[in-house]
Image 1 (tube, rainbow, N blue to C red):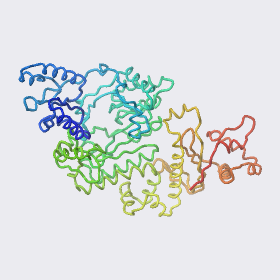
Image 2 (image 1 turned 180 degrees about the horizontal axis):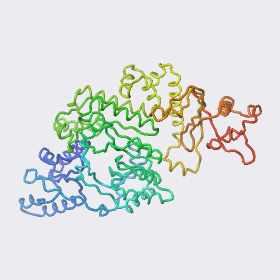
Image 3 (image 1 turned 90 degrees about the vertical axis):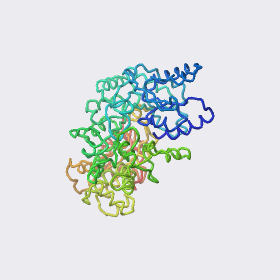
Length: 580
């Protein structure tokens, strides 16, 4: 839907230059509005609905046959009865019967990558560095979530590419310059569990599987399948949770069972080496303050697991879904807020012309201002969606501890922060609380180490296969609590940490960023290295400390010579960064 105004602008310009040329639209952006498009835009000839691999060649063939007819009446009859299209017949929009989707995706031809510009050219234009390459791994969705057009576009059916074909297409990416990872575009990976396991087994059997990511429902990913995905090279999965309130999920027809332990599934995903992206929608119909607070609280708990990515959204009443049918007419654009489904589009004069003239066809560019609170509430939700995920992903334990100490939930804590007008870091430091200061210092050290580690970008599989070890660096922390206990305490699965001195090193190296607990003597040794850059004099005064070097060796922070523990190895392998 986001590209439909641009497509119409292009079509209008083409029609002015070539008035007799048939112009045909297709794709998900036409879902539910195909007839209105033909009725309102005289320069359009037809809309190919749903899958068009079979529709389009037949349509072109019929047009060619009709062009050969001398009788205009016969030309007008050329497309009569062609399933899967809505077209202009004698000036009137005619909606032919639906065409059945392909039964077997194996019928599709191989990808014609040679007909596209090189992937590197796309990356040069977009600035994207990841090298994520899409694979048409499956189509459709049997669900009909109120905010989504996917189920309806594909006729509430789901099919997957045969396993052998999918593996072949994924592996073909390895020879494509600029491609590093595969993106399996089917929206519900794991819905056909046996096929998903079969794919994972085939990929896992490879000596070096290509990293891949996918989209899935959390209730389709059981622990066995999650573990298989991790072994097969999956490094990231998008999971649409939408709301932590079961009543709101029922209202939007999400059909996610309340028996599912969502946090447990996220733990299993992380344990398998897969980063979960948790997608949450704020402001769905039926969401009250309690439901919004529950969603924010859930997001905080998910962030406490460590490594979870959070993605907050505001709903768009797109044409072709129930939310669009129910709320599209009452919704409107809100200045300064780009709707997620139309982000970065619709700004040119020609696009803006269509959006203003036909708001019912372009409700993808609107927000649910018809809900309780109107535009003011939408702006509040936009502020939460813009800032809270960032804070939770950067400072999950600091934020949760700050909330716990104040006796407020995540939503109330965000509102408290907003009222101060300060940054989160400044707000925490103003508390002058030793525990809060320690946890904040820890998480800031993690962020700095991660920034230094940015030169080692890559998935776990790529890191493991790297021929050259990454540079190792560490930040040292002397704190009044055991940092390892904070997360479980805040998740209410562990005891409150006791106030006593502990020593830690936040380390980045070949295995990414880690936090190590150190004995006091080893901590002093690293402090000496940081201040002097030479351990020789200190080790002569503390000869028994040589044994502590073995811990650093076990953690991969230095290489000990075969015959002796040479402190110069420590100096050459480990860089101790100054702690802020």
